[in-house]
Length: 237
Image 1 (cartoon, rainbow, N blue to C red):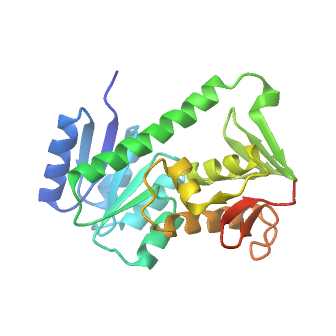
Image 2 (spheres, rainbow, N blue to C red):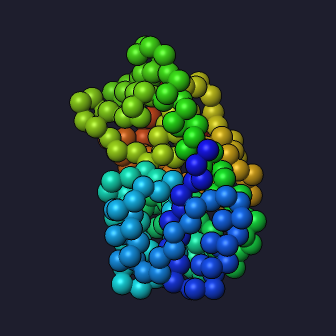
């Protein structure tokens, strides 16, 4: 099996070298760049399986790099940053990051997050490849149609662009329309990682999903809050 290719965008040479050396011992292929301009150019030239992205980088900010990547790709993006405020995490996750790792971090933690992100990507690909029959590959809820064979979502005739996690959250609801999911359950099933009590990631992705699929996100019909418990698919079905 060919090694996974990771684009590491980090302007601190010591951190970059430490991560590169460690990840290469785990059989990952790592390309290092040190500013946002290089990152955008490298990403446009080469296919990567995952991006490790610092936010505070020169020339083009980490947020700018993430916006550039998300114009053409849903590759997993893991932010590594010294910025640890809730607003920074919310903004990063809201722009399409799959995970947010705060500095200082352990390389073991970074490796665990990388493996989890890549495992989710493999499951998305495997689910699409293993789907048999158009009837089984299409989910419907109200005006929403989700095609599992090509990972597209439409509301009526309008195509809706979802990130990988937004798609997975919506798929979970549409496959189990009567089930109420706690935030802990959503995090465990979608992120496939231990829930540490941080509700922010789930809240941000639910909010962004509602903004994309609801007529009025303030009065949702598809993704409903069950107060004190969690979320479920709404009566729009």
